[in-house]
Image 1: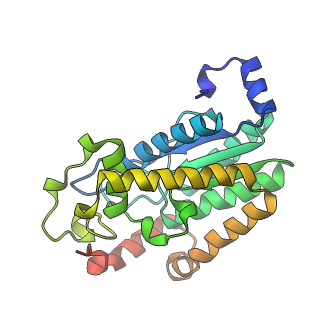
Image 2 (image 1 turned 120 degrees about the vertical axis):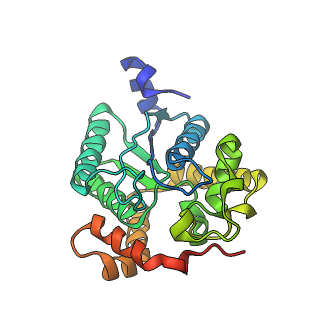
Length: 262
């Protein structure tokens, strides 16, 4: 796979001329309970971006680990919303100036505010830079099954089991994991498996390969509007001008509502 950091200018020009996309993995250092590593989001995003780059002969950039709205916890790291907006605007503008006409951001972190800001930045970039297409989303986003986008639960655990099984420690989970104790939002992580993780990642890659190959401006605009619609209830309930406050208030409301299902 071509790495942006390793290419000479003439090599990069040749790849852009051939229609290569620029692919940026986006990670987070965030609490994922006692059974998963803090860097799960970035580990999955990097693996997925590498696979996508190989499959499409696209240009892989170094991962960026600067999220907003990580799950409230002493070990979770995040930047301010204003910082994220500036980084995204500068990233898209810089890649467009360099010659990229398709930019892909694979985010392993898909909290509500973070996803909305990425989508809004993608739409700004396409409006500001004529001919630029920006694709942002999580590895399983295009499968159109919201239940797959869990947190530290069945599906995230399965993906990491397929990628880095050495980092998964299900033995450290309590017998009945709850969200407040273990960060588990979704089905019980013990339901996860290597085989299921491999299948989810395969389906995710196939969907992204098709999307990058076929989607144009109108399709992307429709997609981002659907993202906003998906989070409309969250925004109306929790967003009062600050994503940072919104995630705190939302987390307080989770309680045992996030208890893992058997």
